[in-house]
Amino acid sequence: MSDHTNSKITTLGGGCFWCLEAIFDDTQGVEKVISGYSGGKVVNPTYEDVCRGTTGHAEVVQIKFNQRLISFREILQIFFTIHDPTQLNRQGNDIGTQYRSVIFYHSKEQKAEAKKIINELEEDAIWPDPIVTEVTAFTDFFPAEEYHQDYFKRNPDQPYCQLIIVPKIIKFREKYANKWYKTSHL
Image (cartoon, rainbow, N blue to C red):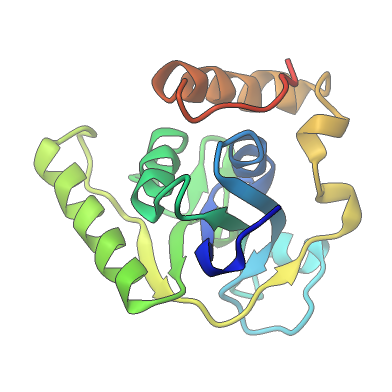
């Protein structure tokens, strides 16, 4: 049972939402993950609209989490581990503004924490290029079509899932074994 006083929401974009959903869906303390679209100028966009790159939306996941079990900082640490925040408007072969790295903050505390962790990562020089992750105020969220929800769980053998998502899951499990808890999809 969820304790609503400890439930918080964050909205993150880091490439294809299938990748982020597959990781955060198996993260301890995460209560719900929904794939969708944020940051655009069109109400109720479709996947096809967003893929055209003209709506301004990013593919995102909206994550409801229990802050007693996982902090916003820990969510961001995982987020920065499972995607490349130095790629502008792309992740690997997924190219376009809809695949940008973005944190849509829901509070001034989330904004401060996001900027803090980005500064720390820049100081640590983990990547040879600068971090281009946007830190932007949350304005809206539109759930993606049903066939996008739980995509990896329903399509684990699909080539994109095997080539792109599985390596991210393995990396997550190796680095954050204490935060992974659900049944395996592999």
